[in-house]
Amino acid sequence: MRRENLLTRREMIAITLGTLAGGCRTTPSVDAAMERAGEEARKQMEAGIFTGAALARSDRGRALYMGWQGKGPETGAVDERTRFDAASLTKTVTAAVLARLVEKGKLDPDAPFVTYLPDHAVGKDSPITIRQIATHSAGFGHAIAPAKPADPTRCLSDTPYVERLLAQKPFREPGKCLYSCYNFQLLALVAERVGEAPLDQLAKKLLFKPLGMKRSAWWPVPDDGHVMHPEVMPPENFVVRKIGCVSDPPAYHADRPVGNAGLFTTLPDLRRFTADLLRREHFSSVYYDLLFTCTFDHDGYRRSFGFDMGTGGRPDGLSEQTIHHSGYTGQMLCVDPVTDFAAVLLTVRSGSTGDSFRGRKRILSLLAGGGQS
Image (cartoon, rainbow, N blue to C red; front, side, top):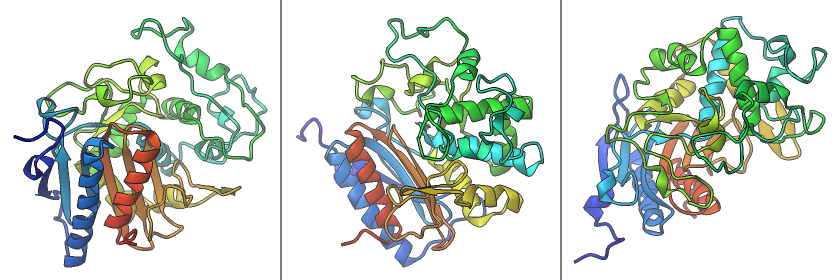
């Protein structure tokens, strides 16, 4: 009889072949790296850092699915259909939507953002650019959201979300990195004004359909038996949500799809997204160059349009040209055009923020062929 919290090897892990269009290339070295990454993931799951996970190189090799969508077997096993709460990985998709609008000539990344939001409280003469907001160097601070509403179905403020969004002024002068969800809440509104459609519709038209991302959508998503369970998140930080509701407070309390969080997506879909960034196959160079070019480098922070390029979250063995991002609910992705490596790791986080972040970086480092010391 096994202990209640211990999974058998068969229950812990299920390996399937990747399903990217055109097939997935694999080599003995890729397989060996997956074995090392998978073994590390198993150790972390046994340590309680997450209850389930899905990981793979983006454009080649096997996909690994392991564990449960929530606290136990009753929540269902993680599989290729499991939708994960992407948390801040949503920002990378929002950035990609904006990059497509730049590609189409509808948006200038170096124009003052008030060109597109003239009703913002900073005034029509503000020099803050779209690019500064996308690199978290505009000086804006906290996200638009209540801290802990008494009624989880309502926002503490009766002021409409967009009105509050437009009323916030910078916390300090532009020029230093101040990571804030507000930046991507604001950029989503820019995208909607320029694209003349809600953010989720723009993403579907400009990204999801061209890339074949069939199970990516903003919350709420239906509970079809293939959705991660949010109650595994630390209860002191979040009101318990129904399955398919986003864990991020700003996204939860907004009355619309927002740019900082709220996306639910799968491993196969994010493989397509990141494999395309690596291979540059679907869109013009304007799109890829914008997302890969480091345009903020100050005090140890390096950022491109919507992505981190610093060393802190970069898996070992990858180059400084790597774009990467992590998410609070246990997600991480990276794309390195120099080493020809891209990967995605999605987890149902149940451990601490720090342990989860370090653990994810370790798993992707092993998958990249580094981190073996």
